[in-house]
Image 1 (tube, rainbow, N blue to C red):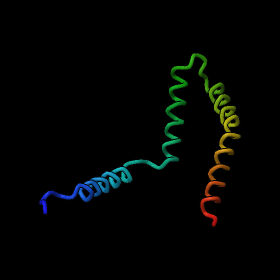
Image 2: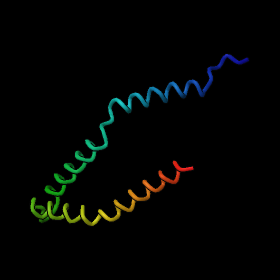
Image 3: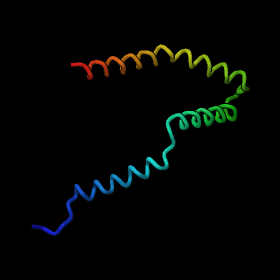
Length: 88
């Protein structure tokens, strides 16, 4: 028998430590989405040639409603995929 440590056991300890570190410091997805939205809004105000707040908000609103059909299609795929996977 060799006296070397098992690489699977060693990597699982390292993996567990990295997962714990990630879970401790990574924010929730909702907080990330709000932060990224604010970051993009600030960048748009700073760098857009006609970036007043009315124009930016109108563009954000129209973009949200244009992506809605795609979002519902993805939701339907997720729900039906789960239903198929969970059924007998």
